[in-house]
Image (cartoon, rainbow, N blue to C red):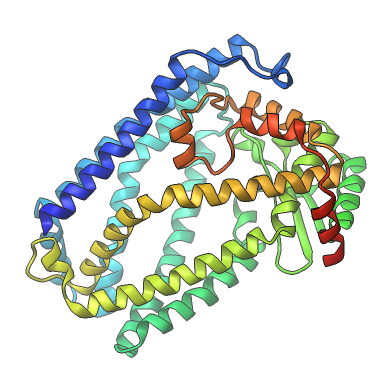
Amino acid sequence: MPLLFLSVYLLITVIRFALDWINIRHRQQGRQPLPAAFAGQIDEQRLDRSDAYALAGDRVGLVEDILAVALTIAFLFGGILPWYDQWIAGYTDNFIVSGLLFFGLLALIQLLIGLPFSLYKNFVLEERFGFNRMSFKLWCADLLKSLLIGSVLFTLLGGGALALVQIAPQSWWLWVWGFWVVVTLFLLYLSPYLIEPLFFKFTPLAKADLEIEVRDLLEKAGAHAGKVLQVDASRRSGHSNAYFTGIGKVKRVVLFDTLMEQLDNKELLAVLAHELGHWRCGHLRQQLIKSQIMALLVCWLAFTLLSSQLLPGWLGLEQLSFAGQVFILGWIGSLIGFFWIPVSSWWSRRHERQADQFAINMVGSGQELASGLVKLARENLSNLFPHPLYAAVYYSHPPLVERVLWLQKGKVDAVSLKKFSADQ
Ligand SMILES: [Zn+2]
């Protein structure tokens, strides 16, 4: 059995590396001509720079990946897991404390191993391509804050779940799921007020005319904007984005200041219309419901497998603590999850297309969104030539060239527009 699991893991690793490889080769093998919308925005020099940026990212990603694979194999199949499990058991026999220690220490080690990579990416790689705007002091402050918030959430969620396992040994899967649903919904609601302000400064839009247009667009889409804000993302990075959050009809719109620097008002509104499309087409709700159903399934499956006591044997071990078995379960889950990636990417691309159609319906054409996306690709040095197979597996958005062509041909869809008006 252990050999079977190891083989599956190695097979997935080979597939992942092969996909990376064909993607890099595809980029280097020559460029297809770009559609007219890219003219004047992205020239050969830009493309060279994008290539260099992608390659630099690929290199450090490869080192990180090889290290992760080696450590995973050593931990699971090289005898470290049972030793670690025993070592934790030597300190305490308290069920909750030992469980928290088991995962807390592992998370800390993972963080420490990741630190040099994070430093390199921010202060060497992103710096070289002009994206990094973060000082070392800000990086340290961010790290400390995330560590603090992470520890609190981990203790609360992990400790709570373990306590429920102890209190209701026969039905904990349902209790743990219910507990997580409540906490995640609570966090979703509170995060914009409690967590995000710890990292970012939110201020009213600097462009007053834009705010009026944003509010008009929101009314037209059937949402009420509680607040329209800009966020000082430029303190950390030159990359740009926009999002909007909120439960119910009152929405909170947040534009990155970097996005406002890079796009004109019409393009900004088109990007926002796309984001509104996700909400109006029910994607956010669907996503939430899908993940909660998935969590229920995972909890039940975990309960069944943990009760069966089969897990240690699967890795050729005699016995393991509850936490150790949960760890194996998580790892097996990640193996299954790999085969789920293309499905969820496909699903996501479908949603993107629908949100794009919604934006066309709102704005009247796809031109503004197309030109906005081209500018963002230019500023973010996006890879315009992914291998089709790589894009099919990993891309949550349609590849840009294809998307821009589609947007330019796009027309207001009378049927979906009518259905949308009827919904209001
Ligand atoms: Zn989207």
